[in-house]
Length: 142
Image (cartoon, rainbow, N blue to C red; front, side, top):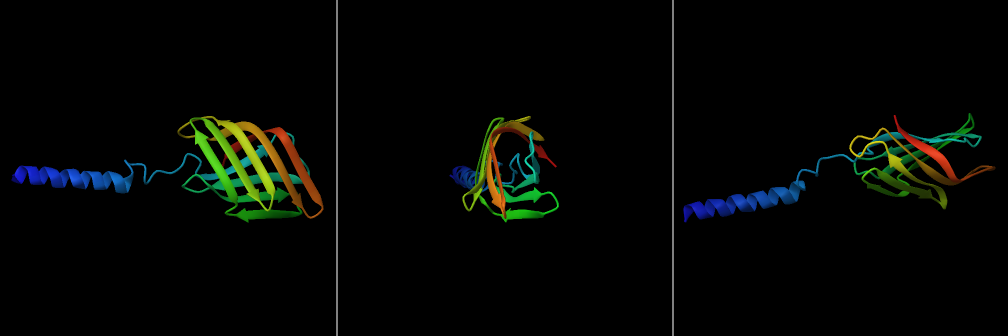
């Protein structure tokens, strides 16, 4: 009887531990965690760069658009959807009806340092309207 009670307590504790820790995935970071440069194959002046920062959950926490020496526009916590399935990435970042989508292939499923794909971008700043439709682009981890 005592052995059965110990087995039941041990089983209950194991189930609770798995539920709390999520089978060991609770503390793991997304493969995208960190800061990435979005490099457009055919740059669109005056846009000189786009930097995307992903949080531990794999969602976009910040996007910065760099415009020559004119200005930098930074969005904190923009509306975004991120999907990683194996080596495929789909990313959509929007704010006030403008932003970008990127669909590409990561160079590794477990520790990617880049992704090549297609970019759609619509962005307006001051008197500058930028648009890319299906252009080649690369995400490169900093």
